[in-house]
Image 1: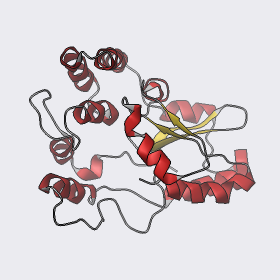
Image 2: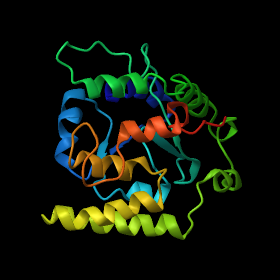
Image 3: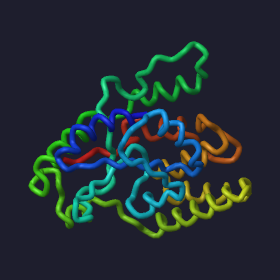
Length: 232
């Protein structure tokens, strides 16, 4: 996880007036705690088990970010946001006993088309130049770049919320049809998919409960299409 990297970014940019806040979108909040505790960061780290950021701001994958200025105005809508790092996604040293599926997932992740320096470059410019930054968008530009919200997206959010309620109250089998409907209605929403898959398999693999899994879906669309391109 990139939480310690963002701590370094925060230490650089906070004197310029920029604050970083991270949010874990995990239905099971306990799964986020070990990562947060291990990172030992000083910036605020919040939990969003209801996936409210997805419904209100259009967060459909991780990592993504939004920019909000000192007046509470959205400056950039939801978009992929990568921490700077020396090694790319999937480029890790694995012990021999690593399950083959994990090896396959990391091999696919290595094909992701991501710019690991773009987010920091834009944040530096915004921290220094504020509203004059070339990366700070006008309200009209924010609206134009924001993801549309047709009826299907709203229905997907409702189904996912119902599925979460049923799962939290111990009715896992009753929750799954609602999760499946959320996947069908908004197939580009990876947070919906990954949460449901993780509830039955930590590696988000195939199961009898869902029609897809992470590795199959990424291969289907192509790893280079997993994240949207970030516009300057």
